Structures are given as C-alpha cells and as structure tokens.
Amino acid sequence: MKRVLITGAAGFLGSHLCDRFIKEGYHVIGMDNLLTGSLDNIQHLFPLKEFEYYHHDITKFVHVPGELDYILHFASPASPIDYLKMPIQTLKVGALGTHNLLGLAKAKKARILVASTSEVYGDPLIHPQKEDYWGNVNPVGPRGVYDEAKRFLEAITMAYHNFHGVETRIVRIFNTYGPRMRVDDGRALPAFFAQAIRGEGLTVFGDGSQTRSFCYVDDLVEGIYRLLLSGHHLPVNIGNPDEISIKGFAEEILALVGNPDAKITYKELPKDDPKVRQPDITKAREILGWEPTVPRAEGLKITLDYFREHVK
Image 1 (cartoon, rainbow, N blue to C red):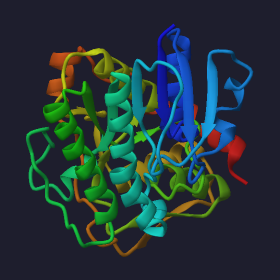
Image 2: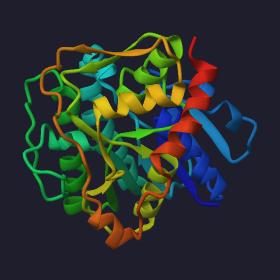
Image 3: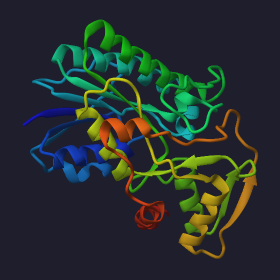
Image 4: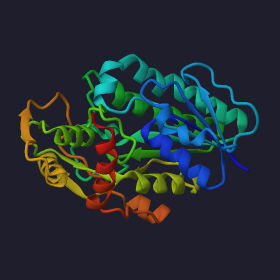
C-alpha cells in the first residue's frame, strides 16, 4: 500500500484529497495544526486503518516515520480574511513549511506536489491567465503576504527539483467551491450563501463587474490527482474557465436560495483585488487529459445543501 502525506488535511481541499487517496487505496497520513482547518472535515476517516493523523505545525521540523511515496502540501491560510489576520503565519507556511516538506521529500525520495494559486498572477494584465504569465503582484500590499508566499513556494520547489533532483509537481489552483468550505471563510461563495440563507444583504465589493471562475471541488481533486501521477514538473492551472461577474454570481445565489429578504449591497473594492480571474487550461487538457465536468448549477445545489446544514 503506497503512503501519502497530506498537509492541511483538515482543511477544505485537504480533507477532500484525503477522501480521494483513501478511495484509491493509499495509506493516508493527514497533518494539520488546525489554524484554519477543522477535525470535523476528517472525523469520518479516524476509524479507518488506512488513515492516521498528526497534529503538527509544518513550519517546525517535520518527521514522518517509515517510507513515503507522495507528499501533497496544502497547508496554508487561503482566504483574505485569514491571511490578513495571520500575515506572518501565512508567509511562514509558504516559506519555512515548504522548505521543511521539500527536505522531507528529498530524504524519503518521495514525489511532492505543492499547492500554488491563481493569486501568483496578481491583478493580471493578460486574460485569461496562462502558466507562462509572470503576474502583476504588489509585494508590499495587504494581499502580498499570500501572493508572495506562494510565489516563493514555486521558486523553492523548482530549486529543489533542479538542484537536488526532487520529483516535484506544482498546481495553480483557481477559485474552488463545495461542501466543507467554512461558513466564515470570507470568500465570495461562503459569504453569499450565508447571507442569502440568513436573509441578509449579499456584500458585493465595487460595482461587481470583477470576474471569477468557480470550479467544483471534485473536478479540482481529479485534476490534482492526475497532475501528481503525471510526468510534468512545471506549473499547471487547474480551474474552471467558465467566467462570471461577481454581481452575476450573487444574483445566481439569490435565485438558488430563494430567500425574498436577501438583497445585494455594495461596498468599496479592497486594495489590489483582482479585476479578472479565468484560467487558461490548455496545458491541463493536453498533458493531463483533464477538464471540469460539473456544471456550476449542479455544484452550487450540492454546496447549498451543505450550507443550509451549517449556517446558524
């Protein structure tokens, strides 16, 4: 049985990855310090002999006994509300944490896949965003702690690949949604669902013309799984190119939830908030044979059922 270490295992994406690798017959070692994750997301895995959990902060030395075949590095605050509240921890997990895991991969001769983000493109000057675009990031702005942490993560991963010969994979993740997102996550989808269910105003920043592209979590996990097992070591965009304005998205949520008390309200656009976000997934199609299959209408219905159970 192959063994895989998944950091950020109690988070939204990490927990779904744990499920997938258990399903594929792996022995999964989940690791999390619960800074933003929740054991509720992986509670169902604890009775399984194929799963073990380590409560650990990966910015400190990481030790895992026994052989390791794969490492998936998904530990990091990932929403603006989190990384603006925890800027130092965000930078440390992207830098020190990544360094520790690359060292572990080198020592164990394991293949490591690191989770980067579409935020490495910043507020992009090209649209849609391709992997060969270097980005437009403000390193000293409020979002810089996350953007630059992930840009460093990519740089040190490539250094370990080129200098030490470590087998590395880099996924650039675009907006993803689905069950197990935190209600208080601060990102558009959880905020809109929670506000609509409660009958509050849906907070749209700016005039709502900025765009995002939302990928359902099962599609994303499939892309990550294929990338890990591929022979490609350069960054690959994984996301859904179906682009929508934030105002249009808020209107979709209102119609889906059907609460007549909920309306759209507008607030000032935060500093350095990207105006457009849409992945070019040509590389994923060609190299991985991957593209998203879950329509947004279908994914949102599943996600709404989850939020109805969890919104207080």
